[in-house]
Length: 178
Image 1 (cartoon, rainbow, N blue to C red):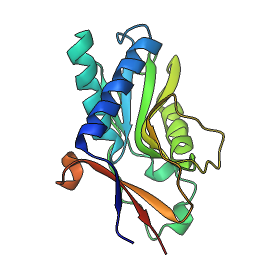
Image 2: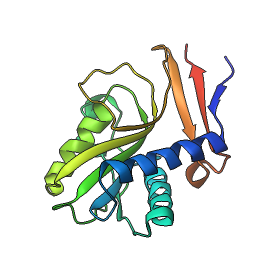
Image 3: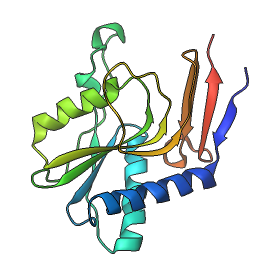
Image 4: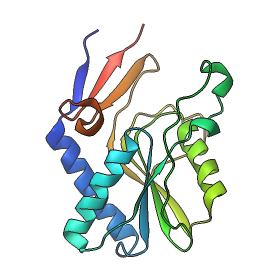
C-alpha cells in the first residue's frame, strides 16, 4: 500500500506552535522549563519547540538529548548491539522537563526515557509532548501535549520525516505493513 500523508510541513509547524504555546501556558511561562528530545526525531522537534518558545517568550529554553538505547526492554530481541546516540542533558533539578518524541505508540519508549532520566537527576516534574499519538498503549502513559491524534490499526505504521534527519520535506505518513 502506498503511504498516505497525514500531515504536511505546514500542519507540522502549526501543531508544534500550538504545543509550544500549551507548554508555556501549563507552566506559567518558560523560565523553569527544559526540553529533552528522545533520539532520533524527538531531538529536532525539541529544538524547534525551544525556538518557538524563545520567539514568543524571549526565554532561552535549555534543550537536551536522550538516547534510550540501553534502557529498552527489548534489547535481547533487537539484534547484536544497539547503535547508540548521545545523551546530553541540561540541569534537571527544580526544573520542569518536557520529554519530546515524534510518535507515541505502546508507551515503552517513554517508559525507557523516564527510567534513564531518573538515573540522571530528579526534575520537579516531567511532562510529555508528542507530534503524533497513534494509540495502542501497552503501558499507562499519556501525553500532556499532542500535535495530532491519529487512530491507527496495529498493522499500520506512522512515519515522521523531518528535514534535519531525513533530508526530505517534513511530513507524517501512514503505511500499512503486511
